[in-house]
Length: 468
Image (tube, rainbow, N blue to C red; front, side, top):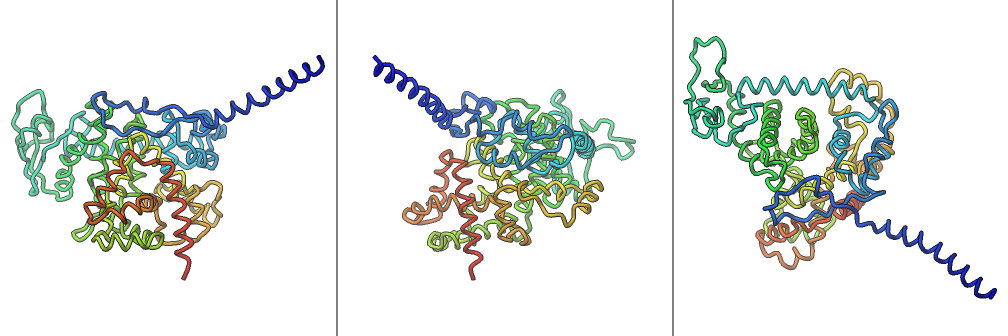
């Protein structure tokens, strides 16, 4: 009888211990919830890559964890959030506001009130720039856009029927130059005049190219079934091309800007998020008669690969790919074509969390307020805890003191090449084979593994680069 009672008691104790353990294992292996419902795909698009990103409790940065990282005044402990973003990404419901910090739109050391003032000032600035553009071309802000040239290289209106239809869809009116005696552009929506300013001509020549790219961008998403969203993307890119006259517009910018207007409801907020992203990437789009800006990063990629995988580098050179142009697209649009829409957002936020520099806002902001803050903080040691992991590695190694620290995107591409090294060495007999092998990775890459691989290669590169 006593033995029976003891056996029963032991069994109960065993069950009591095992059940919580099994539950914890279940939590640890939590497959997560798909985030695809936040970025709805059009039903007829059946060949879209499957998203791997999952919202996981305890790993993904949730709205609750995010809001708890702020003090009552609004100061953000960014260090608290960076590691969580790297571990499990950002919940789609807060992605837009988190990105504003990751991209340097706001200073974590600012208050709610200070950020609200900055936001309002920026919205007014964007409205001013947009109005300048509207005065030059009346379709800006109209909810419509063009996909055909609106002007010739010598400044003459094209009178293209497609343009006329967009300018005034309700009427079949001819577009005529304004009379020289006309006191104002009173009927600007129906009239275009000869342009003589070379800067304006250059800008207007890009408007149709932006339109052509807009209609091709993320067309699998239900979001872009609405004309107003396509127009918003066109407006932002047209305004950006106007204010950044050195770079203007380049193909690929649509892919970079599109997520911003999906994540941020206010057009001006989306513009500033894109503008901050372009601060990092504009060098890639800067073109001269002799070169394209991204060639500098391709050259860096070649140097990195030569150090970490000399055999592969030699093979690529032998095939005539020593310029690494086959990696052009990956660097220009940050792997947007290699991942599903959802996974590319996950990749981006992991990259930015790893690269995060708490001085980002002060480096970008040009207002007097920021200048004074920057002067006041000069000489103060940067808090390493507030830096991303990649940034910390650069600080420790002294790489940050270099004129231009290498972006993590270069090591992401190097990581992909390293992963495909055996296949490239054994199967690539020409550049066409290299391109085909790399194209086959579309939809088959894991964003988290790619970032982990990039971090390992970065560490390896820093060690080997130090050796004489």
